[in-house]
Each structure stands twice: as C-alpha cells, then as structure tokens.
Length: 324
Image (cartoon, rainbow, N blue to C red; front, side):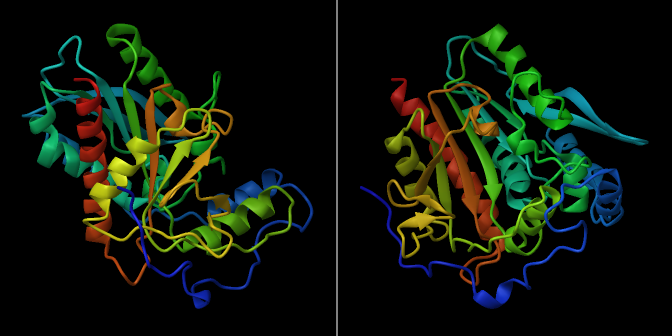
C-alpha cells in the first residue's frame, strides 16, 4: 500500500516577502565584511542549555548519555550529547537518529528527545538505537539553518570536513561502527518552513553571488531517499505511520516536490553522499530524511513533533521486521 494526499501543492503565495537580501552586492560573493554583517543579525532567541541539555539530563536515570564533542565559537561552548540504551547488545541492528542538523528545525530536535523519553525503553534490548538530538546548538539558539560561519552543516558531511557540527557527528559514527559494526539504518529529522523561501534561499543566493529564483514550499510531510541506494519499501513504511498523524505532501503540477521529481507518493531522492548530507554519514542500508511543514494551516507544532516520533518508530519497526 502506498500513501496519497489531496493537500494543496504549495504554501500560500502571501507567505513570502519580495525576493531580496539586505547583505551583499548582487553578483558578488560575500567576503569577511558581509559575513560580519550577517553574524551581527543573528540574535540568540532560545537556550540550548534549557531546551536540550536540561531535557537530556532528565533521561540520564534511564539511559546512557555521552558527550561526543563540543562546538566552540569564540566564548560560546556547546557540549554535544548523544543518548543510547544501557543495554547495548552485540548482534542487534544499530540505528542512528539525528535531529537539529539545521538548528531552526524545531520538531526534529523535540521529536528525537520525545522518542527517547516515550519509546526508548520499548526498543532497548531489541535495537541498538543511538540518538544525537541537536547537531547544531548555535543554530538552535539563533533559529538559524547555517552555523556561525554561514555554512550549512547539512552540506558538510564529507571526509576531512572542518565544519565542527558535521565533523563531530562523523567521529561519533566512526567510533560506534568500529566497536559495533555497520549501522542498519539512519533517520535524520528535518523541517521545511516558510523561512526557507523568505530567508534561507535568498541568503544563499546573496552569499554565493547568484540571482535568487523563488520556489515553493510543499504543504505536508515528505521523505528524501538516496538516489544511489533507493529503499522504497522502507520509505513507504515510514510514510504510512506518519500519515496517521499529519498529512503527506503532494507533488506540484510538474510532479515534483521542492524541485525534485517525486519517485513515489511523498518521496523524492537526492545523491546523499555527493551532496554531503547527514543521512549519508553511516552508509546504512536504510536511510531517510524527514521533512515536515510546521507553517501549514493543516497542522500544528505538536503534530509535527508527533510525526517525527512516528517516523522514528516506524523506521525501527521496519528494521526489526527486516532482520528476522
């Protein structure tokens, strides 16, 4: 069975302001001066310590919590933490769950933490799950997609990466794989929001000295599979679970979702490793990137977090069924 949807194809046209960006000269790459201007615009709006680390602390009595690195920008230091079951059993499938690769994508972080709190014990002893709930704490606090260097961590998961957020997760994955063997699956939790069109994509164009070409935002939840390793049954298992929580994004009039051909209902494919995307970091057989649209009038922030949790549980259930 596949998942279908009758949702509107794009966000309302009134959601986005005119396509311009206040930093830089059209047609010219940013230099140090433009980067400094951009940094000055980034205002701390929430607390990683209060929102994430405090939540992780409440889980320590039931799960193992480890620090896998630190992100440092000037005087700001952010401890990176990962959570796993205390019963880490040799021979069980290992699954990575990541959130907050883009710090502004709230439901990914909240969904990862909620999965551990509400479902972690149920899967312990059956799956060796590993959750890194917030990859980009500086971005979390500024509600920003980029890191402080105006770099997208989710284009930076490459061998030899100097991007702190990406390199730390890659080191954690390598350490776990060296001790436990290959990962069976990786689910990376993301959002697509109106600010992708009103802020992020205009900023990318300005930074790179290119003209901004407006796009649209898919209204609903969708998944990104791997062009080099497509796993349609896995994607559909996740979508079927999510469809019970929130609506699935349909394609636009070109049968595309966010500029990519829809390969099956609710699914597009990217070259994950070639693009340096987080979902490529384990080399697992089963990988997916979730995308939910919290600005849709048809959903709520709570439903988006619940959808992320449903996606993680469905991924684990699929791995368990496949390993029998």
